[in-house]
Length: 216
Image 1 (cartoon, rainbow, N blue to C red):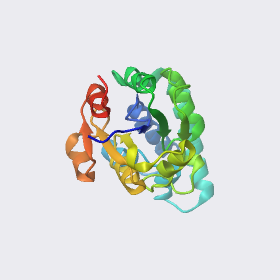
Image 2: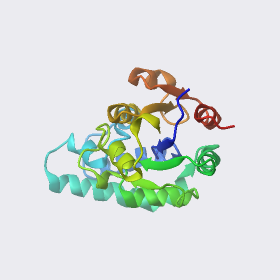
Image 3: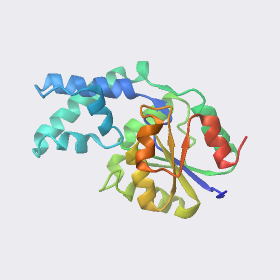
């Protein structure tokens, strides 16, 4: 088994359950700006990519995109603390990995401020050695740049790193950066969805991920 030295995590759908809030935030923005409604399934496909990328599929007008993002974030932040919580076992899992001496980082499509707020909500604000958000890169996931940036900051090799996420965007980003990849099924996407992205591993519980890393 590969001896993993660095563990990089996605945030939404992986460590914290914010998926329903994200979906509702999109619905609110679409309604407020008279945009065509989208189904939950259509919205889920975009989770894991930045807001600018999602809204950019609807227009190339930066002023309109900025207005839509502002509306989304106002709703999201207003309801954030009441609706975001960790998945069962994820906080203890991350703390166990940290205590074992592994290098830890967060690679998310949220902006840095939003990521820090989410981590603080679940008591993990001081655990990550590096945080790479959408506003830290030119090319967001599924491009390899976010994962590559985290590894550069940590000065760690890709071949001993595993990137853990809940979506195909995470798997593609990690693989393209040369890391191992693990998809988790406790988020919004099931095993069948993840298998299409061909991750190196799929974990159904935080305990399985710990065992994969070599921890008990």
